[in-house]
Image 1 (cartoon, helix red, strand yellow):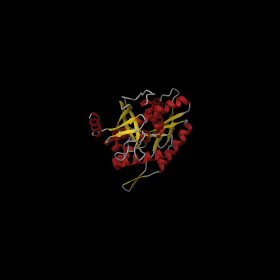
Image 2 (cartoon, rainbow, N blue to C red):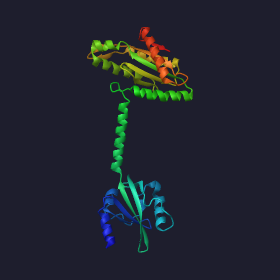
Image 3 (cartoon, helix red, strand yellow):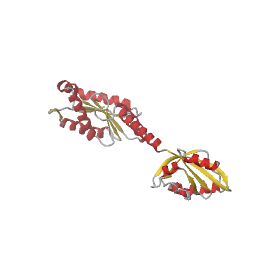
Image 4 (cartoon, rainbow, N blue to C red):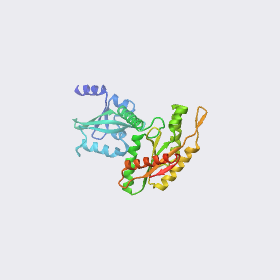
Length: 300
């Protein structure tokens, strides 16, 4: 009577459950187990437990279960919850939490029971949360208008790039590009036109920079530039290419072309790796470019 009541209780359980004998054969599976594994009702008893195990551990775990129930080996998993996976009828792997227990001896035969808690919903929620977190991070480090990294992202990249430069001994150049007479664009054409210009210039700078370079919007009309593994001479060549591309472009806004230029200041990373000091020197070089007539590149 107790055995019948116990099996009825297992049949009604929400979590999947099986009973295994000393030959590693499944002797019982409840309704939740069939629902989880995809097997037809009543088809699991008599099958080896290996049918439910991942390929990588199939033989090893099946043998361990049999050895334990035969009394040859101790188990380290009994009574503990363990993250695991089982094989669905269609061959896919299902993430589960496993809890196994020794059921003792019945009619001189040892049995083990196991509960399987489906983790697919929990893992899906975790993945969704991780994706949302990554999206929030991207938003926090991105300029919404130009889609370039923002100043915070630039500073993070600058710290990392400067540290790598100092460890490797390779040169690094820091730059600042500023749109010339940008206030005039806003005053003459409106702020919507100014936004269009910012977007267009950001795209041009990014297109002319190299794959390893960092381009970010660090202020209203200012763009931060990082040139890793690059000395001043080579960085100046890239900066000139950027400057010329901007000067040659016209931004179409409401059928009215708007032409702008940029000035760029460059400075090498100081020997002590202080990128902020290099940024300050690049800013001073930018001021000199403005003073010397704009639409030019100056270096510290």
